[in-house]
Every structure is written in structure tokens, then in C-alpha cells.
Length: 366
Ligand code: SF4
Ligand code: SF4
Image (cartoon, rainbow, N blue to C red; front, side):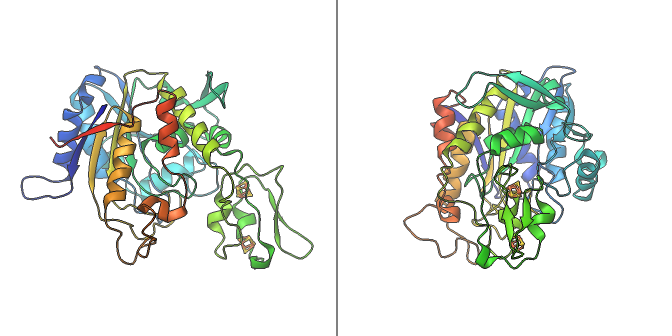
């Protein structure tokens, strides 16, 4: 059984989100995982411009200061995206980070886009797993001595749940690695719902969508890389996520990818999850829908499976918020299932099976 440290968001004149973050960092023993002069990557997500659900820069600053106090050299990092948007190359990504508040002055450490200018700066690492013989890890993360993974917990349209595991897998992979993770999710257009607006064609990263002879969007499955972008960008629900597709291979690939990444630095990974602004979708979209549950708290652990399981359990135990996507949820489903009816917990079960961590946990409030 793994230990997960937890602090709620009740605050007063004596305690705030910074002091609680610091207490959890110390209690979880993160200081012991950092040696003098270590390069320590703070792996977070700067949020697409227009989305404000991500973990804000002043919280990251608290963590950067703690790393520096232990003699480490922190830097804040993320990787370029597979889809077009404000984070698909290092120039746009850095501009986006600044617009969302991630400057040296505010976030307390320099920002480095881990996979370089065009997302092609990565290390290939051999692995032996069911789905992979090799994985790709963004160079700055691969080169760091230790990694503090700072995750915003939310729902997710492909995984059902997004936490530390998703943050490490997609977040430490360059775009081509993300493609390897996504590869068998290929949506189709419902022609009768397509209004020919062309938005999906503009946003498809693989140029896989064309208009057919009736000016309805059509996806070429041989070009589609399964990134799922068009399913969200279409405002007319003409490109639904394929619920009949077995999401389990995606979860398996994700867990295996994370195992391959963390095995490159045994004992040097730390995880902190913020269960706040729990939006239905990931922070890669340029909006964040109303949170589905109240802000719950902060969790810290050295076990990515345990911290995600504990975070998901807390979300599922909370009352759905009025006016949110799950306000009228079917009582037979938990909160995360109510979002997309996805087997959100399979990623955790599979991660436990392959030895990434333990989904049995003890929640300790220091
Ligand atoms: S975004 Fe939707 S409505 Fe617009 S062209 Fe694509 S499928 Fe059709
Ligand atoms: S057609 Fe495929 S590659 Fe293009 S946006 Fe949709 S899922 Fe992504």
C-alpha cells in the first residue's frame, strides 16, 4: 500500500495554498529525491490560451523555491502538442506560457520547452512491453536528474480522467510519441450533421480531412493519426468520439509509456496533484467548462498510480456541482463515468499490473 499525503482547501490567516503545498512537499519526502546541483524538471501544463483551469504560476513558484532550497536547479517544462494550437512549437508555446503567467519573475524558474523548437528533440529509449519496443522522451526531461510532476486533475474526453499518469505519458512525449500513444483512435464524420464549416479541416494536424463531392467533411483513415482534435473542435457534434472503440489499448499504451519513462530515473520522480477547477476536458482546449465538483485539495506521493487513484476517488465522492456537465447525472454512474461513460479506471488497473505503482493507498493528512 502506498502513502498519499492530502491537504484540503480550507484556508485561514495561518494556512493558504502555498503553505499547504510546502507541507505536502516536505511530508512526502520530496526533498530526499533532490541532490545538490540536480537539474529538476517541474513538469506541468501551461494551459491553452483561453483555458484557466491549469495549476497557476505562483503555486509552481512555491515548488521551485523548495527545490532551490535543497540545492537543486529547477526549470519548468512541457512538450509541444500534436494538434495545432498555441503550443505546437517552442516559440508559440513560450509565448502562450508567458500569456498564462509563466515568467521567471512569477513562476520562480525558467521555462524550457522539453522537446525543442519543432518537437523533434527527444531521446529514443528501448522498452519491452506489450505495445512498444521503443518510446520517445523529450530531451530536457530525459536529461533532468529528477522530475516533479505537477498535475491538474480533471475529466478527459479520451481517458475519462486526467491526472499524473496522463501528464507524464502525453506530457513527456514529443508529438511523434503522442502519435504513438493515440494511434488507433480514428473518428468518422456524421455527414448529416456536418454543416461544411471547415473548422476540422483547418485544425487537423495530419491534413487527414477533406470535403467530399457533397462538401461534407471526410476523414482519410490512412492519414488520421487519431489525435482526437476534430472531435472537440466540431461544434455540431458531427465528429463524435467513437465510444464503441475499445479505449483499453490507449490506456495500456499510456501506462506502458509512463513505465518506460519513469524507469529511466528510478527513485527520482515526485507527484503532486491539484484537485481544483475539475473541468470535464483536458487543459489543451482554449476553454474550460464549469467544474463538475467543488475544489477538493492537494495530494502528494511518490507513486503515480496511488495518487491518481486517490484523486479520482475524491472526485467521485464529491457532490456534482449544479450547472455543470454532470449536474443531472445518472445515479448509477460515478462522476467520472457520468462525463463520457469511459472506463477511466482501466489505466490505473493496468498500471498496477505492469508494476508502475500500487492502486491501494493510505490517505494521510499531515
Ligand atoms: S467541424 Fe464539423 S461541421 Fe465543420 S466541417 Fe468539420 S465535421 Fe463538418
Ligand atoms: S482526422 Fe484524425 S488526425 Fe485529423 S484531427 Fe481528427 S483525429 Fe486528429
